[in-house]
Length: 325
Image 1 (cartoon, rainbow, N blue to C red):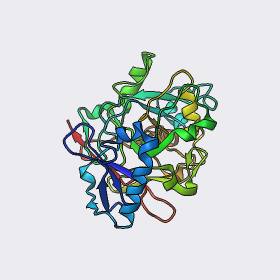
Image 2 (image 1 turned 30 degrees about the vertical axis):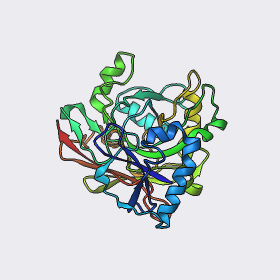
Image 3 (image 1 turned 45 degrees about the vertical axis):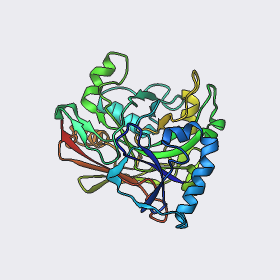
Image 4 (image 1 turned 90 degrees about the vertical axis):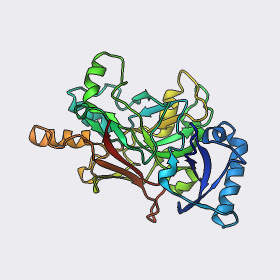
């Protein structure tokens, strides 16, 4: 099942069910007015949404043509946005980029931070940039959406709490990170609003590609029309989504609608390309002693999408242009 949020002038938009080919949608307002409302009562709402989705697929209900520009992120705002860094290769490279050693618990204890979740960008919204010197970077990621998840949830139990998956562009202002971390209190200004894919999908839409809390498909990223990343999201995700949920639930519970991100999808094989510019710059430093690739500037266009093994788009495409604020 594929869901989306139609912009309607309100803060949380209108929940819609989307046909698998992304061509048309049907409003779900008679079932749940918003995505958050659906997640709050998922056990009761999901069967009704699936029934509507089935009728839409069969042509038994009239569909409205999908115009991606009319869609917000599936959750235009969320109670919590917790982003991990589950790909070890990414952690090693970006730490090198700022002359910092990886933590000694790199392979045993996940890295996470809590991002701003009060206002997400839509999948086609511009990325506002006030100062090009801040070092604007994209980060292509996958995320899961949880239902009510109690404290103490284990990795073995986490799967039952994963209700939806999305793609993410976790925008990062790289040059603001070192002075922030030097204070010893974490990211803040360096993490502006993120954007999510047009469609959120239930795990069953992934078929066999959803295994043990990982998505075993390639995540593609384009910059100004050039394919810069064709990364394999599965094998090198050191900490699965189930591991990340266990980690964050150690000391507290989470409410329905909490989003957990994978961190930048990253492969050791450089032929797979990149999911962020920081990694490309680090490779250039290793090979030539200095970075050559600039960070994004006004006018640059980043696009992120994932396809199934038959070549069908799963989440739709994030398509964002950087603009001077």
